[in-house]
Length: 93
Image (cartoon, rainbow, N blue to C red; front, side, top):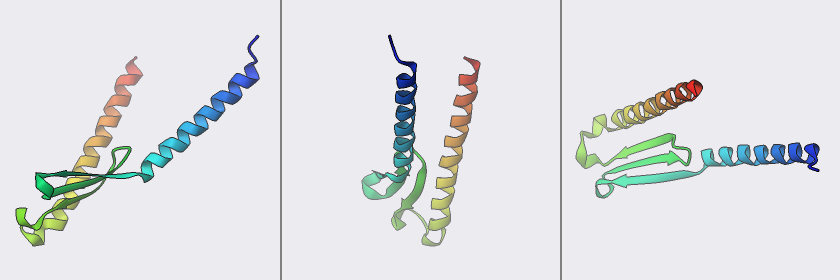
């Protein structure tokens, strides 16, 4: 006979491990590169964009930093909207 208390304890332990793993993914950073290094994107393992770095050769230097920040903001806005849409679809199930 299966012990319900043991099953609940195991489920709680698994949930704790999943929570810890999700938190760890926020700390891991990865870098994507395109254009032979002209564009670099740093993101967390969960997909949150942290930085976009553009090589000076592809734009005016005085506009570079604001353009990088706007790109990061737009990517993260799209990601958040995608997550919201996914949640709404899941509610329908």
